[in-house]
Image 1 (cartoon, rainbow, N blue to C red):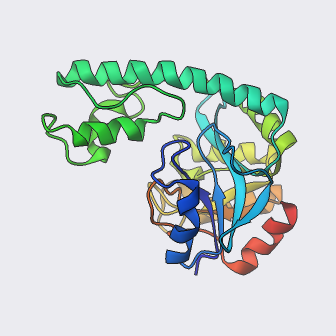
Image 2 (spheres, rainbow, N blue to C red):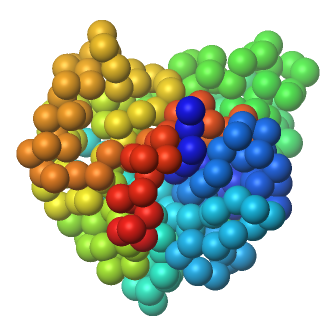
Amino acid sequence: MVYADLHVHTQRSDGTLTLDEVPAAAREADVEVVAVTDHDRLHPDLDAPVTERDGVEVVAGIELRVDAGDQRLDLLGYGVTPTDDLVAETERIQRDRVARGRAIIENVEDALGVTLDVEPREGLGRPHVARSVVAHPDTGYDDPGAVFVDLIGNGGPCFVARDVPDFEAGAELLADACGVVGLAHPLRYPDPEAALARCGALDAVELDYPYDRPVGEGSADGGRELVEDAIEAYDLLPAGGSDAHGRELGKAGLDEAAYEPFRERL
């Protein structure tokens, strides 16, 4: 049973839930703890590292994309107390997101010969563009995933890369502001072993998540054993979450016993 879903997105980035809707979604999934980890953006209505909202424990977090040189990784910061440096970097990233979003939208519109009902703005992510493509009656797409595969996925014909901090700078920014800093979805990267080798500078790694090469028996690149070896080698906290962008929480996460040492660090 999932007690703590530590990877959830809201409308602050590319999720569909508002913060006010998070507690009800958590109760529907029998989840007691939710970490709000929007992409490259802090939630202004979470004014403490951990708060209670309508009976649900809410952890203030962030998911920060960083450049490790050989590949780009996603770091998760949990229990955020914003620093001036982190706020300044997220504001810079959001300015870049607006420019990048504009370029992706224009690329997709040119490729499909349509005008999409989406505007570049802070917090814009590729899922917003994909949903807009699906919603348009003349594109022929009915699945956002297919939009990623054909057009806007990494290396796709309409893809535009973001300007992100390097791994060391990003990890330091999060370490200064957060109670726990971890690596998100370790087996999703082109080189999972290189990604896990970076965990020596972190506190945690996601051991449970529900999609795209999830950690488990039979997974690619070593599966659960590879991640468990990193947890032992670097004395990491196991983390986990749904990486939810919709309303359904609790697809993955920690049970109550696994969350207790995590809570102590927050």
